[in-house]
Image (cartoon, rainbow, N blue to C red; front, top):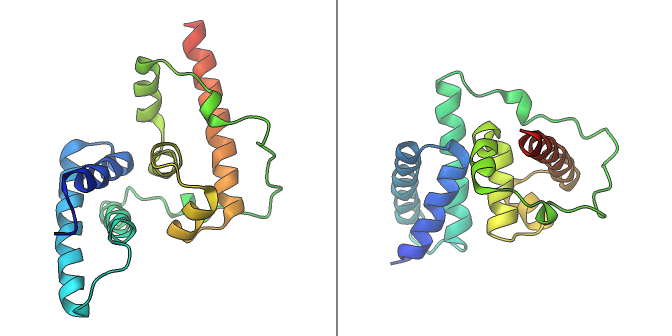
Length: 163
């Protein structure tokens, strides 16, 4: 079997990072497993990177679900990359210290792109280049997202500290 318990747990965490709800994450994971098995039977061969393939299925299923519900905003994915890429080398997201309750409040206000980026970058430890390859997104777009996310988190942390 390709997916052991820890692998399924990581995929479930990824699904939660996208949708934010446990029940929806279980549904995404189950439908992704079904599609994976169907694809494997059709190809009659092993898929090279099952974890990345499953994350892609989960992400696409999530987007399809929101398209059907008219919740999906396509403008989020069509970001302009004609702007100057911000320099974030002197500051990093890892240096932000966020309390657990503040983190939970912040997590609820992040869109699925931001949660996905945090999951792949912060939890799995992928580099920006690896994330760009997996999401088929330009590196500059991801750097801009990280910059905006960092600003958003700093603003939220400042508001939380003053409250």
